[in-house]
Image (cartoon, rainbow, N blue to C red; front, side, top):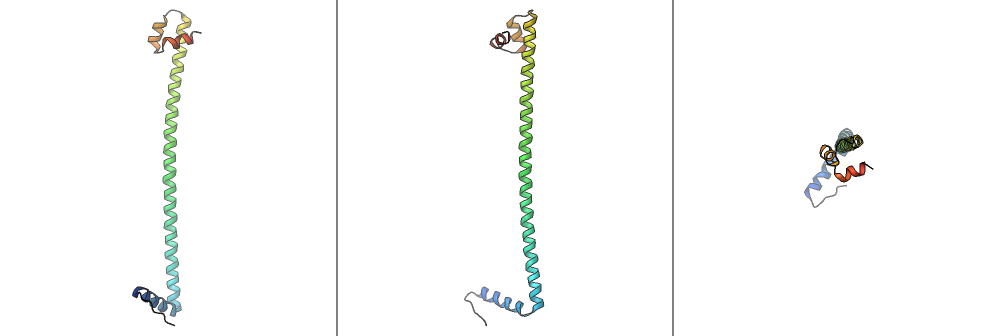
Length: 118
């Protein structure tokens, strides 16, 4: 039973389909090729998905490295500030320098020194 379509391309496609369906070997080859094309498309899609996951993981790793650097810098800064306060306390305990001299040597304000001297 032949059906004719108004669109020539669709008619031609159905003619080719009928020809392929008529011969078992040709039909099996066409089905195998179709399956291979679907498999290849699926593999390409999975590969693209995997690449996107890798890129996202690399971006997360870069952000994590930036955070580590920032935290390390903050820790170093806090350590320096703490060391300065310890040094200022030691100067205050010695009693040989004035508050102004200690402030000048350490970079701490007079208010900070007064707080440390308590």
